[in-house]
Image (cartoon, rainbow, N blue to C red; front, side, top):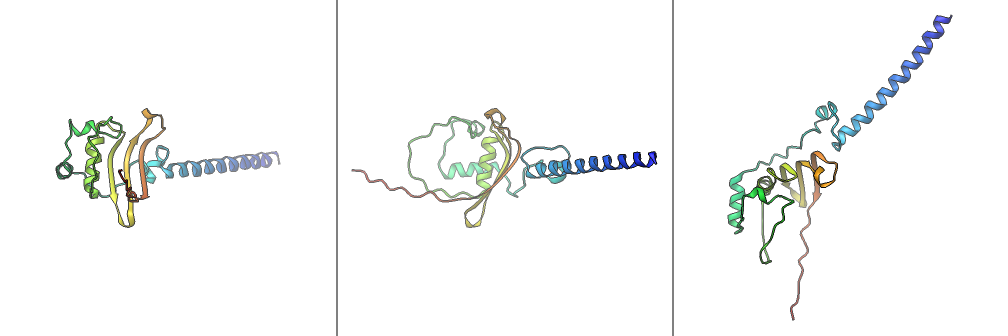
Length: 167
């Protein structure tokens, strides 16, 4: 009987261990599925280790055509104008600019892939004022614990036109 008692005790402990392991696996899977943290193995299986492919391809020719069409003159290489650059703008004037997903993606990659915090960025402008953005982000040097793929889908609202009356 002592042998049976010991076997039952081992069985109960191993069931608890298995339950704890299953709970830990579920928690790690949920964390990996969010894409907020990289979890080796889980992130690869769930596909959260890479930025989403939105199907928009960057093309330097489209970026250059956008600059020419909008009469934008850069005072250096495009890589000097990433999202964190100290950019000095000229005289403000009204603009009416229409850009495609390809032009916006091309601009973001030309200006950010070398020096900026966002790499391999894709922007897709959709119907009903929807915008999607996907990129590999490294914001650690700015104090944020983000180093991996990011995805954003938001409604895009046109700014309200402000009328000013000069007296």
